[in-house]
Amino acid sequence: MRTSWRSTLALTIASSWMLACVGAGTGGGEPDRAALSQRVRAVFGTLPFEASSRANPVTEYKIELGRMLYYDKRLSKNHDIACNSCHLLDQFGVDGAPTSTGHRGQRGSRNAPTVYNAAFHVAQFWDGRAANVEEQAKGPPLNPIEMAMSSEAAVEVVLQSIPGYALRFQDAFPRKSPPITYDQMARAIGAFERRLVTPSRFDRFQRGELGALSAQELAGLELFMSTGCLSCHNGPAIGGRMYQKLGLIHPYPTQDQGRYEVTRAEADRQLFKVPSLRNVAKTGPYFHDGQVATLDQAVRLMAHHQLGRELSESRVQAIVAFLGSLTGTVDTSYIARPHLPPSGPTTPAPDPS
Ligand code: HEC
Ligand code: HEC
Image (cartoon, rainbow, N blue to C red):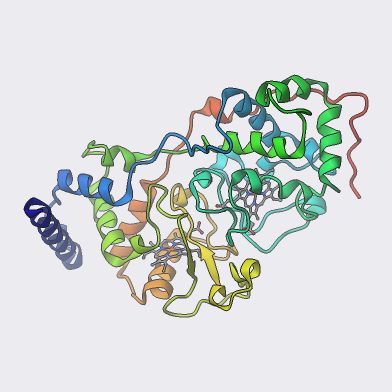
């Protein structure tokens, strides 16, 4: 007990000292990197190598199949849109647009979040309307402005018409009959997503590689914790764990009612899932509507609307630098575009209508 309050006190002092340095803009010294590394590890927790699930255990067969389905445009009405059209795996899982283009060029009102590390989130979508990645994956194929298929059965007909998928589904779901169902399609995609996990320099620092972060990134990390960002963006994914009101202190101009659209509870108006900040330097534009173009601006708006604080330019830049240390990738072989099995004689033709 005694050591624990002593070390807590020591850390508090260390962090206020650190803050004093940043505040004065002197950069007059380095924090105790070893102590900070340990504290950060305790505060955020370590990022697992996969977001495992008892309901849908990840297997190599599911991953192989899920990767194919993720890239397969035949799951869309006009054979022109796949998951990878809006969540490009070689572009940090996003399309870089404020809102995405679906069937016949239609656009929704929300920004496509990254699929990387999404399986760790408490729920999926900005409003949490799907419980997990498996449930989420059932949405886009049937969404009229996304992949626009007419029904689950129509998707099953397509999958059953592609001879090469029969064995793949059997291997992935050996105890299921029939192996090819809409549900199992979603489970395979979900299993693939559960390993879209991107450790970064931040994790190396946490593990004790004390030189992994620059002095400015460390200052930003300290500020991130001491300014209050951490109260919402926490856990190993640096977010994704709760819903919070956008505009908690100062109202934020948006028509989108967020979580309220799902629950119809007054208290949920303009609550959104707190996004994970992993790879955030690469996943702009920002916010649920994609209306914030730069990360600097996103940080300034967060400080103002969520915390009622105006940050100095040097503090904004330090936080942005820290956020940059959250950029990571998976093995390129894991996301490499797979060879897709050719269509069979009964595979429905593309339908542009
Ligand atoms: C036409 C573009 C488009 C396509 C195609 C698409 N998505 Fe999305 N995706 C979005 C948008 C936009 C959202 C956010 C919608 C919302 O929150 O209401 C989203 C949300 C998600 C999320 C939630 C992430 C989070 O942080 O909450 C996941 C996971 C996801 N998509 C995976 C997929 C998969 C898997 C497929 C293929 C089966 C797919 N998407 C197809 C645009 C697309
Ligand atoms: C009270 C909770 C809360 C606090 C405090 C908070 N955030 Fe957020 N943050 C959110 C929510 C909710 C969103 C999603 C906003 C939306 O709906 O677009 C968000 C979004 C963001 C985004 C945009 C991510 C994206 O993918 O679009 C960034 C960057 C961000 N926050 C950084 C910060 C920083 C830096 C701080 C501290 C200065 C901070 N946040 C403090 C809740 C919070």
